[in-house]
Length: 326
Image (cartoon, rainbow, N blue to C red):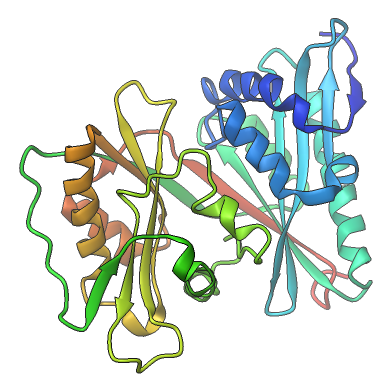
């Protein structure tokens, strides 16, 4: 391919971007959205910053051949977290990938300085396990491997095990009544995960009930009874339909338990409930992702019967600014 023409992304690019993502995922999977509706939701989540924080590369025929995105993931412990995404057509050479990388880091630095020159930022990005050239580009430019995300699958059994639940908790559907409480519980649960998205009130619906593939029947909240806590949401599970799978598959998209409620079997109860609902809804497989650093969760999923699909990826990070970086 010849030199590319670069323009910002617009919502109208969702279809060609989804096509590019499918091509890339077939060779170097990192968990990109592959359906236009999901890509459109992703772009909408960037808010009004598409012009500044996205870049689409067009080849000589006007076909989308590359994409880059800088996403503000929020501030945790005084550190701005920024997600970098770079996708290039498999036929493009390393020079295009290097150019995308330089643009991403430059835009991330602009985003950091917009919040004050003294603000530290942590950049996070993904690299496929089978992409040594991509991982080498990142490590040569200051990124460090921090973990591997494991992609796990489980065939839905004919007779899923019974669901057990502590008497002090009640299962409730995920709906508008508890949306803000669910958001706060989610953000508390992932407070110690530097790369996890912590949505604000504007972006939260697209993370849960407004997601195009949201499955309300498989999703649930566990609510504490008795009013001992300002937030009764003890645990949550949001499920999505995996429309890219070769058989009916539900994704356990977001599963978590607040710190004060952990080690009580809540995650197991929600997964078993999802298995029952999946069977009755026609799904034949569950899928989820878990970090290899989260050993308790990984061990739990393996005990339930999840196995690796082979579509995991590496997560790499780099600090910008702050006393240890400048």
